Length: 80
Image (cartoon, rainbow, N blue to C red; front, side, top):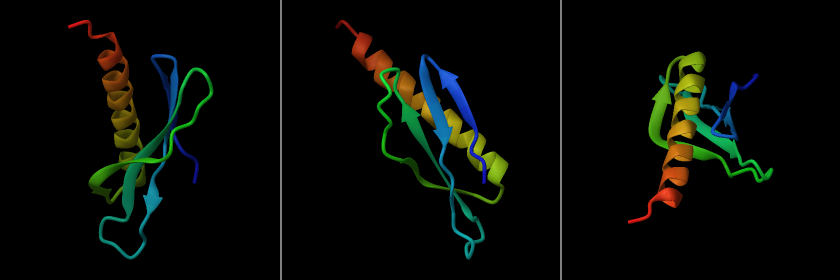
């Protein structure tokens, strides 16, 4: 299975979808984030998010990764 990737705010986000074949919703969404310095995060799973379609699970995983990058970078920039 090939994972989707995207670059966002100088971070590489890779969809990390885990298969659960015996489930009615067999794909668990999650992602890996590679920082500009090359550090790769552990798999960051979306709590209780399962999907019936692999493509959908990968796209949601990338969106989740972008939100996590935004949260981390915006938190560092707050000056109040």
